[in-house]
Image 1 (cartoon, rainbow, N blue to C red):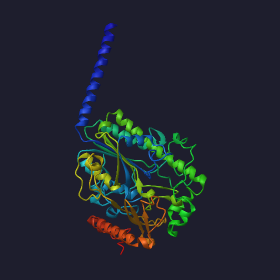
Image 2 (cartoon, rainbow, N blue to C red):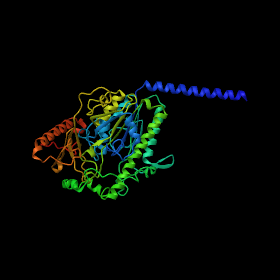
Image 3 (spheres, helix red, strand yellow):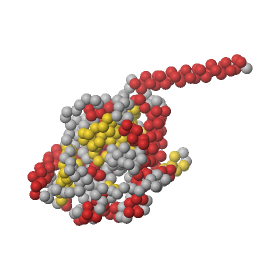
Image 4 (cartoon, rainbow, N blue to C red):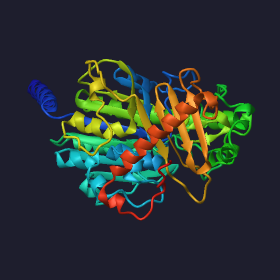
Length: 480
């Protein structure tokens, strides 16, 4: 009997020793190779709906990520709609250059071959994609992704023979890739694109869906009134905005106080469900001993109006449409930092390539954010950016626009409707007063219009030959 227990003890010690050696080897191998990169994209998550910015929304896992990482306080998208913004994230190009939105031809061959997953795959990375796709690229998916699980929006998906909430399903797919990739000898990059908190547009009653365990959240909370949401703000809008898709969707989201309270709470629950999934993935990285060499990036594909100006949706040029959260946690730089410089969705691709040590294509229009992440002082950075929305569907009244935002001013041109906007962001951050037609600001309005037109010409000239050869564009306008 004594011999039996002695043998058992020796076997246990051997197992423990082997596991310790394996963990030590894994740690050494991890430190000697490029970082893994986990890019998480939420749909319609605007910048202020994090609990670090809001007294009502609960996002403890994103807050923890922010506390350990770099928070970009002024992050924006160059196009406030899903498809175009997602192509901009992948290609580092503006919509004006890549020419992709709903109803347009697939992204060109050159642009598609230069998306960051394809370049990282060529550089030896294992690459994955899970979740919302809804875009078109040229070429084959296996040329850029080793693991590719695109999903249409649904309430549930089947996992191990059971229907589970889609947010959990996307989390499980991401976990599956990470577990598989952790067994290999390659660094990996994974894009996790959650559908939440995007509304289910065909469901005009409940709109937002989430795992059932989130139903009790916010039930005892009275949602605060949206900024700039009184009748005066709506009446000040031009008729084409009063009858736009933003107003049509407002009718079944926020038209009454009861409806507003109910729908915003559902939106918040959808955000909290994504936050929970982020926390689960972070815990998985720790469990697999990958957290010390995995960079996590979190952002949204565009903003979202929640009754501001008595409108819903995105598409326009106000802050609630353009501004998104952006958090980058690099465990190799374990410190919290808040960055005030302007960051854009077109900066994501060059940043990811730079983090991986892979050359950035000269055609990219965004910049690597690494200089802002580090400790050194950055003396030169953008102080303005061009934005636009070129989607012009026949089935829905969504007016196209373009504009320019500086630290002080915002200019918007609804060129098909002959309507301009000018806001003084320093003195009117909620954008309540349109100064574009006041005589005092005519010189400034015209100057910003001309500067925006310079960007249009610059970005159109940057199109590939394939894109330039297309017979028609959603927006061929170069205003006078």
